Amino acid sequence: MQRFSVKSIAEMKRREFISKAALSGLALGFAPSLVPDLLAKSASSHLSDTGTASPVSEAGFKGGKMVMNFYPYELTLRHTFTVSSFSRNTTPTVQLTIDYEGFTGHGEASLPPYLGYTVEGTLAFLRKVNLEQFESPFLLEDIMTYLDTIDAGESPAKAAIDIALHDLIGQLLGQPVYRLYGLNPQKAPSTSFTIGIDTPEVVREKTLECAGKFNVLKIKVGRSTDKEMVETIRSVTDLPLVVDANQGWTDREQALDMLFWLNERGVKMAEQPMPKEQIDDIAWLTERAPMPVIADESCQRLSDIKCLKGVYSGINIKLMKCTGLREAYKMMVYARAEGMKVMIGCMTETSCAVTAAASLSPLVDFADLDGNLLISNDLYEGVQLRNGKLRLPHRPGLGLIPVH
Ligand code: MG
Image 1 (cartoon, rainbow, N blue to C red):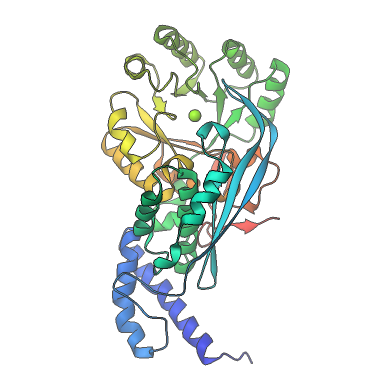
Image 2 (tube, rainbow, N blue to C red):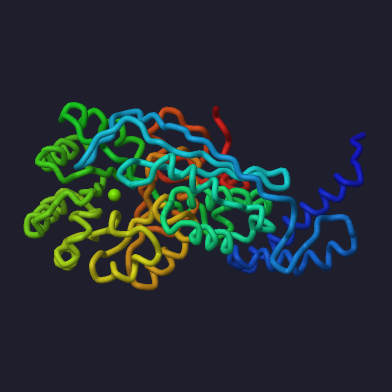
């Protein structure tokens, strides 16, 4: 017969209570920020009967201390990554964990050089963070506000903490992260997959390989070989395409001609066609374009959106730009309220950050979450693909399973 100590029975009761209270809150459609209040209020009365669990404060459930650890980890790319301005074979990241009450939340900061953040800067920021001052990971809003007071930048480091906190909260509540936001995993969309710039032979080969696995292909444009690249892909598949110029076009008339040419070849969306500084030219282009024009480099955080309305059709949200899921969700709500389209993208990342982004994907028009598929040293099994669609793990938190 299995024997339990008084302490372990108290622990089991407390976790059972957390799970039940959270479920009742989520069933009523409470936002994640409200769940801790529910827990605190309900817990006070419930736990006073037992007198055995950890204390509960006005601010939320109070357990032990949150302990954060982090280390640099370099991602190896399966193929050389080339966009209009550079090529590379690796992506630096910082992997992070937050331990709390016997659970471990996982997070990640991806640091592709063009973002302008470094491993050193990320580590230095994380060393300044003191999570022990917060009673529990449920104080997500307070914690994210605090992080912005340490440094206005360092978004990937903040995203790493936000992702780990979401993973932790989901595990504590026994629910997957998408459910914390009231989202239907059946509505997770197809992700696009990027066909890298290469010789026509290689592009043809890669396209044939991808055409059976994905429903949308993405092409990086902004080079003199763009039309050849598109024609090559079109010679082997009629799948819908999206394009990303990464600010590569500077003449608006030529950009518009190109968008019409692409539209005739089944291109459904264009991302960041011109340099972000050319605001008037982009607004002119968006007004005339035969497809949605989406801001990527122009859109970092929530506060950017007000300036993008009327300039772009929509925004590409990436957790590494916007400090994580908490702000990404707010951006989605704001952009929708302004009648703008919403896209979610990623960097080259492990399945940790990609699964986090995919958790919000039921809310978007376009998903570009192929970053984990581009690396050969992933650390986790997380979001999967089924017939080209994102399939979210149903396990608590991010539902990650370590593979190394
Ligand atoms: Mg882009």
